[in-house]
Structure formats: C-alpha cells, structure tokens
Length: 235
Ligand SMILES: [Zn+2]
Image 1 (cartoon, helix red, strand yellow):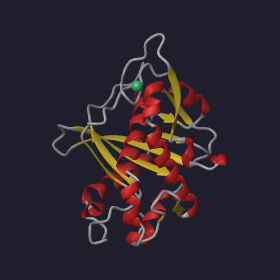
Image 2 (cartoon, rainbow, N blue to C red):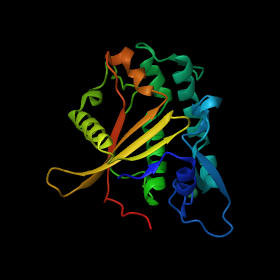
Image 3 (spheres, helix red, strand yellow):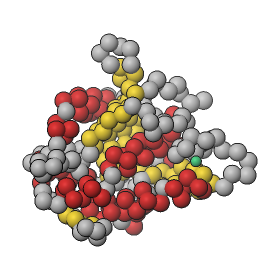
Image 4 (cartoon, rainbow, N blue to C red):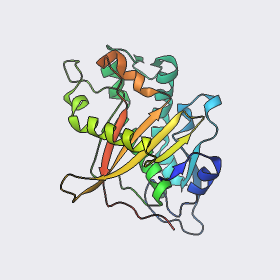
C-alpha cells in the first residue's frame, strides 16, 4: 500500500517535518518558521481552500516563495475564468498559449509542488537540481506557434501508463487535498537495466489537463519524473 495524505489527520502528521522542504535546512531552536500552503491557496476558490496540506518552512524561505505564490494566483485565474489579468492579458486558447507561458514558469511551479509532496511522504529533502523532467498541461509552443516537440516525447506516455497502473492497484503515494482539487501521485520504478531508481509523478490542480485541449486537440495532464534512490519508510 502506498503512503497517503488524504485526511486532515494525515495532513497534520505530514506537517511534522524536521527540515525546510524548500532549502533542505534542518530546523534549529529559535528558527522563525511559517506554514506554507501546498499548493498556494491563491490557486483556489475560497470553497476549495479547505483543507490544505501545510508544511513548515523558514520565514525567509517563505518570503522567497512570494513570487511563486503570485504565479499560482495567475494560474488559478486562468483555471477559473479562462484568462488571467497578468500582463500581457492572456487566455488559455490557441493564440494566447505562447504568451501565457512566457509569464508562467510552469516547470518551476510544478517542481515546488513535487518537492513539497516528496518531503511530506518521505521526510526527505528533494534538491531542485535533482535530474528530472516534466510535461505541463499548459502546452509548450515553439517559435512558430506550434506545439513543441517536448509535448510528444514517448517517455511521458510510459510515465502516464505506469502511474495509472499503479494507482489502480493501490501502489501510489498520494496527496488529495483542497476539496479534491489538488492531487499528486508518486510511484517508484527502475530503468530497464534495473540500475537507476526514479520516481514518476502526476499532478492535477482543478482539472488543469483541460487547458491543453484547445492547443493539442487532446487532453494532456501533468506528468514527470526525477531520479534518486528510493527513500526508506520514515520511522
Ligand atoms: Zn528554508
């Protein structure tokens, strides 16, 4: 059975971290700490803000995340209203996608969520420079305005199948919070030569895979991977 954060009790337990999921530093007596909402609550309507996953971070790390919080706010606007007031005013439609992606660094936003969920599951820090890849539901476009090649790498289909299969048999580690509007699954696997362990993740925020429909004529969710030794079960 996988680990889960799908009840308030489990979310409270996950919060008992001894380190800052953002910088990896161990907490020391006297450190000023803040609660960081995963994802930032600005991504959700009021009715979906309960209950969230919250993790302790250094106060200074939390203030370093304020630009990222603002990006999640724009993502929330886009998901709710189909557009965001972030200049230049953008829409989640074919013509607006490229402009939008210049303003919303989706990869960085996704990495923040994965870093937090990894810490919540395994009480283990995931450094940002860990080798990784991810596919965004906001489609990357090339300079000519066509979907970029990275939207079609075969590895992502394999990652999707792996996550779905393991979800069916209950073998994923999963977070489901914010009234079901945030979901993150992580499943562990090895490369074909059995030498390199890696994690595959899938993330959903408010059904954001629908954003890809107008650009690709198909749905594209958020999926990706990172390479690291499989963490041992926390004590
Ligand atoms: Zn920190």
